[in-house]
Length: 192
Figure 1 (cartoon, rainbow, N blue to C red):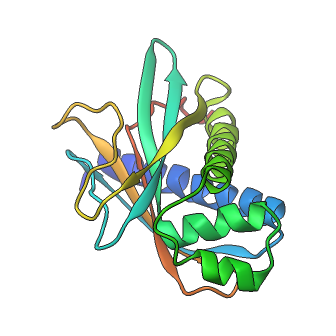
Figure 2: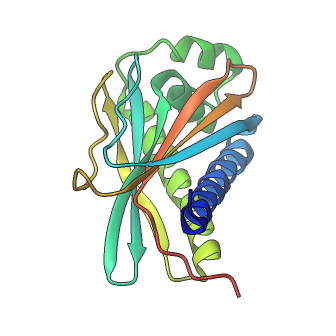
């Protein structure tokens, strides 16, 4: 692997790790539950990564870079997304445990899910602005459920590079789960 490719891979991993960590920290503070990122892997691909073997929620992200609007997403399993939304609504642990089995969401749960998306967008924005020297901003683009094997719906041209990062994470006392971050490569200023 060339020096340029090594630098690119290191930059992608650093950015993805920073986003995962900031998302976990912000959601932990808001939901008043421990949210820990245990490990992160990252690679560049030329296609979106579909949801795994169960339903997931895709929290869509819109990135505004100089002369470009780019799109991506942070994907969480449905039960963990529901748990975060339930904790946001200050539900006790026993209600959260019951809610994690939901397959149909009522308006209140959907609204809380949108708020989780806004928090993810805000956390991503903070990292992007910090690492880009203020030249790249991010915001939530909403959220959507995705079935197993389905790709998240965000604007993307197949065959173009896409950073795909995966993190093992743990929320409160729940089992470890996987988060998937998919973003187009964002040009960042060189460190001086």
